[in-house]
Image (cartoon, rainbow, N blue to C red; front, side, top):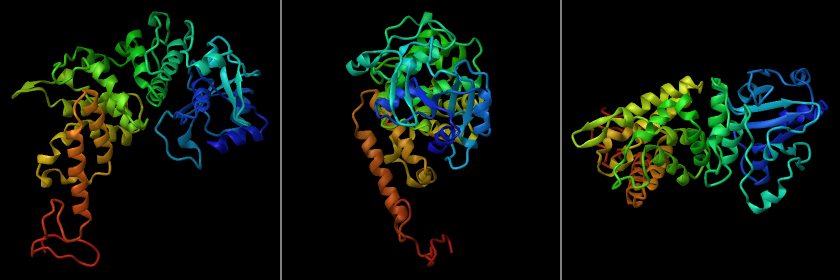
Length: 379
């Protein structure tokens, strides 16, 4: 990222981070995958410096740069990168004081164009932007800075009637990367945006959980609660938390199981939703894997290792355990099942590393030979 900033500065183009990007920097939080910048230049000047600049027609950005196309950057999920406003004077007008807050990338100095320092120091919630095409987008991201959903009438917040896939990805990624994503998601639900644009998520409100197993509330309330137990804003984990129970509205009771096969149904549906939003296929498959097996850790201590060895060897299994932990703790359950699953996983990993034992801990049989370069079975 620094080399992109430096290229712009070397070309004589002043650049500032603004809004939630500047606020995250002010609070020393990791930057979100989508960063919002204002450049004191024209789009033509910007294009002369940055290759592969795109113009996706976003209401909050004049130009976009996908980090995947930049040499020297690690591969990022589709839709992440930099969103530029181009203007002669870098003063954000008409989007509220909190969106006008900016940081000079050349020297790290903050500029308080909206006079919000007093509120920043006191921890007061922001005055949310008034109705505009960007107001819902801005308010949802600002809401993620605070643990409690904002007291705001969502009917005054606007969004494009048919938001593009880039708009949807930017909004979702920026919310999930925030410290309190549940606040932003709650605002989107109350505004009607989720029901209109992501109707599969809105169906979680119809999932009436048993109070014995889910005292936190219905399917949507349970989903929001999982984020309060998240330790990292990792995108794959966060998407899995958001979508892990999305199969419940499609499931039915069978053999005493109220939401039979909801994990399998949810994995298939989640993959379709993420592909529809333009996420890369590897990410879609990772999220689908987590959702497909999110119930398995609960039974891990009692399952034969031979039946789950392939899953336990998968490098994504530690993330699956994190999903299971957030899911369990969000329902106010005791932590024993999580710790038991972790202990069972660690034991299998120790066995796998032991050259004289199988994954279940049993010794090799006489028909197994251990050559100098590794295991060969059945010789």
